[in-house]
Image (cartoon, rainbow, N blue to C red):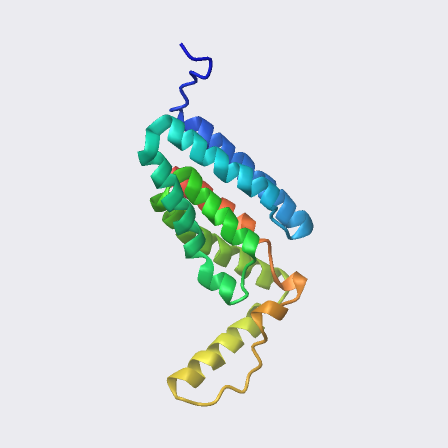
Length: 181
């Protein structure tokens, strides 16, 4: 009989640890606009260990594929300068905890949550009409092949007050994905 005979096939442990990671990353992203590797690396390793302990190589593989899938889903927004590397790694951690299917659902829910947060910020900052006008002119110019004369700015030079910590959207998406089943 082993001293390490702890049967952790308790999904609530994985869920609880993921929730702790999400809450801590929201806190640090709100306070410092950073998601720290010293939180994410141990979290991913713990997720893989728990998944391996509970389901063997099958769940370990699922965890690894979830990690890669979660990170891959945010590669384009990261490359465009819309989100930070911490956000990419956080989505990877979500996938490591719950697998690739969960990561995809969480990603889609996070995109919706991010849109809702963005609209809220635009309304609060009284920039909604300006943004809608820019979108209208951009779409109109593309539809009729007219050169764009509106300055849209750059994603990587957006002012701090014009952005929000995407860990909030990722966390909301993961929580929504959890309740969606």
